[in-house]
Length: 181
Image (cartoon, rainbow, N blue to C red; front, side, top):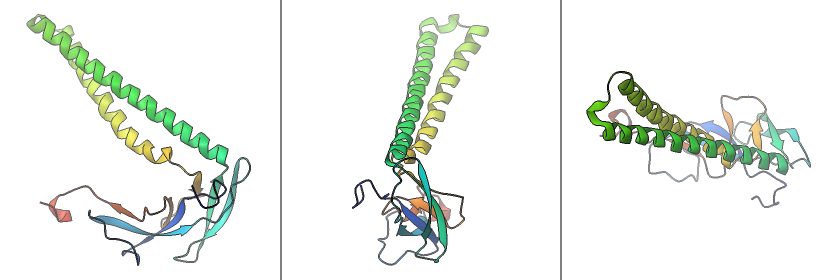
């Protein structure tokens, strides 16, 4: 929550920069992109959304931002939770389908052939595919779970909305191109 309670969003306007901003701590992973963060000094509307111009403290450009009411923000979060729970249910179903197919195959051993074997392989692959797909998609939904109801009115190559303190992107890769082994 912000200092003004729920009246002002805590999300900040971020400007992409090439180097680490002054005062930013060096993270332990390789950074792929740095951001300078600036407040979004816009009061939330009582209902619906409001569009406001926010001045970027890095470049001085005004950026159109859309700020949702508290109820709108809470609806976004609830929808993201629903999607996440659905994806997790799909993961459990997929894992169960794969396990059931393997158990069935083990119980019947070499008696499975032809169409039964093809069905068994399809069930295992479908179950595994569902687990992988839903797992990948859950990670994409994660930012929406903490949505602050703030977004840019139109895409920008240098600006975006980020959480306070979230002033860099980093990579998990450890290949030789990024200095790993």
